[in-house]
Length: 99
Image (cartoon, rainbow, N blue to C red; front, side, top):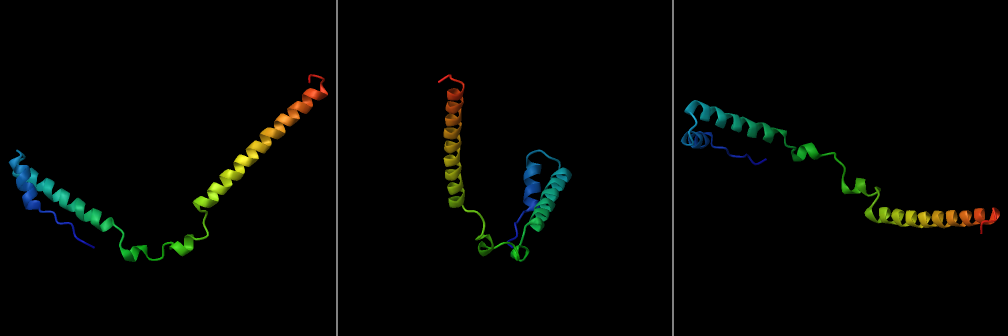
């Protein structure tokens, strides 16, 4: 993995030039250095990724085309239910002599 270079001396000098005392500037630069090292150690490596799902493993999962087909079928079902409800309402009106 590529190392991120952080020049603590340069950072401390810049902080000092900005008006921060030398001890504080060095402490801040050191803290930032430690944070970058900790972040780098938390990153996953290629070895960490071995054993995760591959494209072949995911082949059996639902695709966007499958979802589009389901949405289309649901729209058809909604229309059918709406027409059925309207038909039943009309029959109810007819039975009670309102139509």
